[in-house]
Length: 453
Image (cartoon, rainbow, N blue to C red):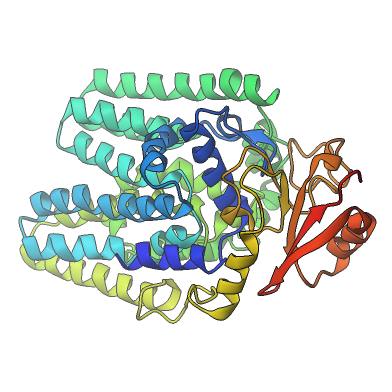
């Protein structure tokens, strides 16, 4: 309830940007209106950017309540929902309601979970729940539930196999050889299909994010520890990487290391995050860490449950809970945390003024809007994040960056800050004669294209 309310307040207070809130809001809205999900905010097909077919489950929400806030509340519910399998497994493995409650609370207090919850909306929220259910089903030998959870996980994103393959390995080792082999085979086959067929057909390339792989690609990365060991070690120690690993582990008191086999299901995913050249993947502020939180939580439950005596289990749980409280206080976004999430007061004068100005934009108009206005205007077939298309920025396959796109003369409305600077000011000065101001307030300005220009 806290994070659902807070995420909605951030949205209402113009605290969510076009990347990524506007992407998913426009994409789900397009699907709910039976349009092709070509998201003009980013210039790519929603399912070509990532094979997040799980988002089809969110479409009915937009038939009932077509607002970005629906996705944000759904996200909070999905993240909280993972607490159910965590609690059930903890109750079974510790034989204690109190310990199970404390271990589940430690999951919910996790700062990576809380920060990911507030980073707009991302399909990884579905994965948090589905991977938690999958690990629960694997450990409890529930094959039907396991199959459903694995299928749901694979539909979240093309690289989910990095979680599912280790899960299959654990099932093969600890539960059933045939189940394990089937899970591994399906995960690898789906990942290949997602990249080589779906993304390739929709984007015309399978390597849009390949620049995030260090040392020149997969081959160079695999050989780097042997060919360039010093450089590889320095790379691992650079940037946020060491502190990121510390934060992820210390939030659970490192207790999962007592019996690390379940926590190790996340080894490929945390490796992907740490090895990436994209620094956001090595910070708990962003959604890339979300799927790791339930894995480490369940790994912690497993480790506590493996302790021989009730006294040892109580001591370990106290350590986990204490670490969770301290971590949440330092890095989380709970009411008692040191940090807050900045946003305008949704009922304040500035927000009310912006809301009034944005009403001047017709619902069918083709719009270019500044990033924090996009998620409030993206329920339309065509909207672009300023300064696109007048100066392409993070649009399409990034092959036209800095260029004026050929359809720029089709933009009917601009929604931009009243005060611009730098490149934004330069771009606006090059087109301002084609537009007239029709509304202004709260620091936002709405311009309409002059007829015939």
